[in-house]
Structure formats: structure tokens, C-alpha cells
Length: 304
Image (cartoon, rainbow, N blue to C red; front, side, top):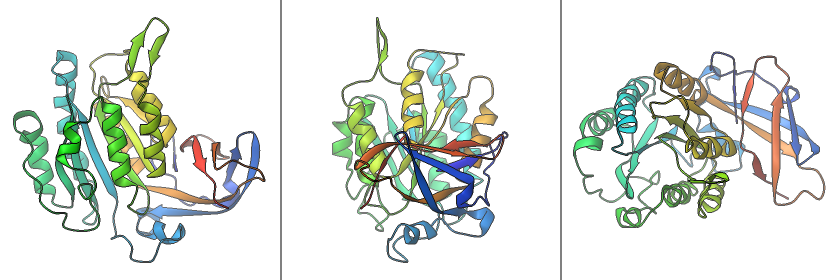
């Protein structure tokens, strides 16, 4: 989970007593709060140990998936092109150990890059590949930190609608220790009905896969509009996985700045679940500090 101030910057240095957690409507005791991020000198690789994974199970650095949702509708493609440029500026904030994977979705899921710290390769895809080319063949995974070990281009070609693509990404991320971040530059999803926007039948499976993978979705809406109906899908998946939703229409720079703050670090909470709590239960996290915003998923798996 992440805690941001009013400017969208990460707030490190909080202790267990600064957090209040409830499972359903029942309070739970927070035993410890561990900050994982640059401000404390910690590496995100410290998190697997905090969660019981072997030391050295993953390399140092963050794991970030760029997911670009493409559509040629003018208000969408123009906004996507603008955010492709902003995404390149975000790359400048990453450290040498951070790894980025790039995927896109139009009629199906396409894998452009497996996790890599090669910024030149990522920039090449953002500057030209996504709009003008087809993905190049991806060879055997170079390390255990890989999307393509379990997610193939062939499986991606069968992934429609985007909810299925999100499920496949979640399933590919689940074996990797620690938390992961998915930055979704998109225009929305769901189905507009007389009763409002409804999620497709595969949304629940996608959400469950992302939660099991400890993957937070940060949705940046590329649509050039103040409001549109399908933004509900972006808002829902972000809220329920512990990310955020941000429009880029008026303030594209602010969206990237908030993303930088959110990914600067996060907290790992060790919480004693109330008795008789179900395996999966609704969870709410808040902090006592004034002006702080908590980004935490809305459901958690309890361990006995």
C-alpha cells in the first residue's frame, strides 16, 4: 500500500501506530509497518524478505508494466500520443535496477518487451513501435523475472476483451515475489447499458488475478474529455488493486508527477486478522496524518 501527501508525493517514515486497518467492519491490530523505497535507503528487494520469501529471491529494483490501450478514435489516439511522450519522461525517473515490461491492447494483447532495464529499447518502442510497427519476436526469458515465462504472444492473440488481457498479465506476475505496478494508459472499459456502465463477465477473474499477484494498477486516462462513461472501468480496477485513476486531458504533467510519487515507495503492513475472518475479506486502511491519501487494495487474503 502507498501513502501520498496532497502534492502526490510519497510519505515515508510512518510507524504501525499511524495506521488503522479494518477487515470488514472489524478492527485489526497492525503489528508492523515497513517502508520499502528510496527515501529510507531500502530497496524494493527488501519486501520479499518481509513477506517470508528467501533473501535474494528477486533482484533489486521495481517491476513496472506499461500497458497501452490503443484505439483510433480521434479523442483517444491523440491523447495516447501525448501520453507516450510523457511516459518517456517518466523513464528518466527510474533507477538502474528498475525493470519495465511493455504490452499493448487493441484487438488483442501484444507483448513488446519483457522486463528489462534497457531504457534505449523501451524508448524505441514508445517512440515508434507502438504506433507504427508490429512486436518483434521475443526469445527465451533472460531471467526468472519474466512475463513471457508464462505469457506468450499466442495467448495474447486470444485475449479479448481487455479484461482477459488483464487476467493474463496478473497470472504472469503472480509467481514473482513482491509487489508490482501496472501503469495503464487507457481510454476505459466496461459496457454501457441503460442502467449505467457494467463490467464484463471476465472482470472479476481479472481483478482476482491482479490481487493475487499483488499488482497495483495506476490508470492514466488518455481520452481528451472531462468525463466519459467508460472511465468507470479504469477507476474500478485502480481502486480495488491499490492504485489510482488520473485524467490527463488538462494536466498530463500532473498525472506523471503523481505516478512518480506513488511508485517512489510503499508500505508492507503485518496485520493480525480478527478471529473468524474469511480467507478473502474486505479491507480498509487509513492513516491519522492530515492530508494523507492511502492507496490500498479493497480486499486482502488472510493467512493462518
